[in-house]
Length: 298
Image 1: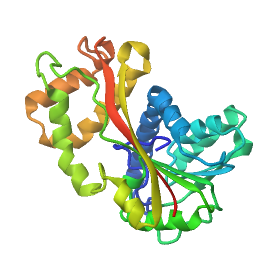
Image 2 (image 1 turned 90 degrees about the horizontal axis):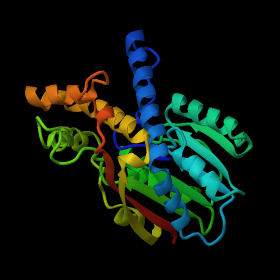
Image 3 (image 1 turned 90 degrees about the vertical axis):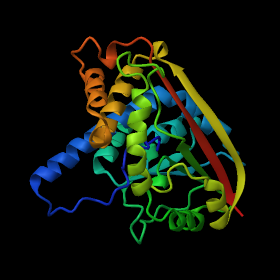
Image 4 (image 1 turned 120 degrees about the horizontal axis):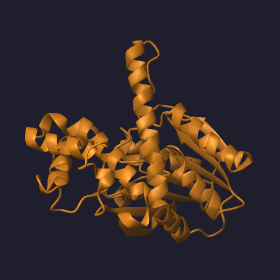
């Protein structure tokens, strides 16, 4: 991402400045909602991101890293921590996300090691991103209209012997036990089923096996690793906020396809004043899988 997120379209085409103001306001709100969930993603899944950076089959410690689809910087800061000699170029389509990333860099006295570049990775021409030793693309490749073209562009950009890491979540995390909530057991799975066709339509590469695509773009596959994520809610108070933020976004996409009783049950979970609020539950967890493909110039 960096972990950007399956439900955050931070690679959408840049907004047309001639759109109406109320649309612009909506985009800003949506951007803020995305930023919040990306920040929570980094907070809750940080140790898993760190374990991926530790696993990367690098021959030498990278000096220049490009984080493609950086979001608000989950990957950027994990990479800065892992490789203290490295500089990171963070690339994203959202100026809001990059601004947030830059503020974090300044707060951590890392602004001399970070460069931000606003770019739409579906545009015909990418900006000059230098010749990185490592390109990190987390939860960003499946957003692209033409990922094959992007992979070829990365291939042309990498330094000799350089590595590309493609990181993807298998699916948006699950938070509730299967028998929850008590009045509508299985609600969360039905919400995901209701959004699945939307994702299939808008993001056909979500859930793809990137291995064959990497090989077709001229890379040699160095390794693939899948990490199971299963974090008990009691371990991190941010999990309730992460669940709330995630299910709010899913509600926006699934509302039209859910039966009224499911929608009412979902709204009770999302009502932070309600005794049934998801923030008041003590049985939450974060369950998903994260897969990384490491590929080298062949």
